[in-house]
Length: 256
Length: 324
Image (cartoon, rainbow over all chains, first blue to last red; front, side, top):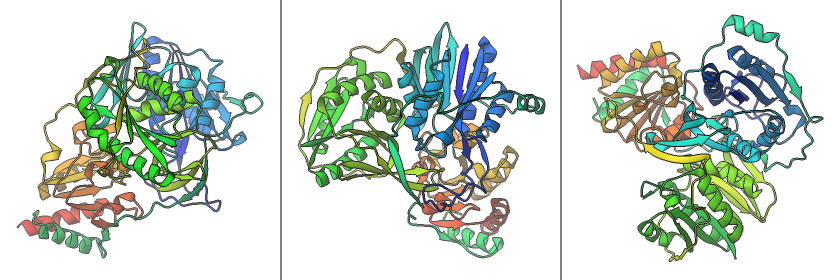
């Protein structure tokens, strides 16, 4: 099977302090670490598992600035055969729609049986790229995918719904699968594989290769901190004092 | 008069809560903008569902066909494309749920109209749509202006517009189904119910929720010991289940379980909105997190801004002292 995996390099903000930069439209990035978007690493693993079973190739594709090539090299080290970067720096206002449209311009010249993407990226939280890409390529898609099994040319696909319910679909290929986190156990790249991937060529494409005149759907006007809700009463003091206060609260509620 | 269209989400014979939230948002928008709210119900044998929507919309379009007995994003997309082209609404609203996410972005792309997803605020300003979205793991909000158009599609997050009673009396209009069969390339097979585990976290008075802040699976016994001392059950946020450290039936949140214990202690959980949705109705919430800006502190009653690896043993010994 010939597979394509779309990967995004994103700032790791879940456990970090995030601040607005001087433009008011972006965050301060220099103190953040960057890595493959979490759902994309599950998408990559899903593709690698299919390649291990059926043979074929994996092309890793990323719309990103030069440092996205580090992330593509991780994909190469884990099991992708080739990698392509689209120069994000040559395009503006990259919302989910425009991102998908640019990916499509590269993918339309590649033969594929399935495309894997993460169901969303943690930085812009769009949930758009997979389904829009499928629509532009005129193939089927499923989002929030929690299982893909291929047999006899058909894919048995599970989608994760609310409350733990699963939607089971039967799909034909080619198709786009926007993968939910937790679908598999993404492997680590071995040191030898990382060293080998360091020497591989990454194809880089940009405006000169993509003749599309694209309008974005949306323009980000400004970032601001989420309004503070009711806000917890923060217990103060040493760890010991705080713990004593918390224990007292729990006791007063009659819970111990 | 301009129309706002809202897509009715229902599953297994029940209208989902997001629908009434969406219709409440829709009514607020049409009141301000002299427009009319139209609901679209795609389903099969939905008479009672249609009746329960009557007070919520000005007009309800009902498609009754067996192809809509169960959900298939593809049949929804094709039917809604036909309906939207005919009705020509200024705005189409859909929930940002497993249902809406599966067909909205591709629907808007097929229609060629501007759209965005997971909105937490929607305004109509000078004939254009401006929304509020959340970025960077919920740590930033953004105002986003959509491109100029005569029609828009948006998905709206659950829980941002609490459902209110409606006092309208809708005209219910049946329309022919634009779609009569599932496409070969995407067929609904069945719903699979969640697996029932050994512990039911929805029945416990005290729930100890653990998140990414625990760092390693090897640290989990610290939380289990603590839960034992306080007499609670261990639950968790999504990353813990994704990593296979705890089973799926321990997950609190929109794709897991909803809990309403007397006490919820969130340990190393930053507070993604999906997690908050599953525990916000707990009687008392105590959050322990080293990041004072973590969104969990907006939901908690009491906050401890400290290293959980120091706090847990200290709090455990204080609790055991009291118990003695």
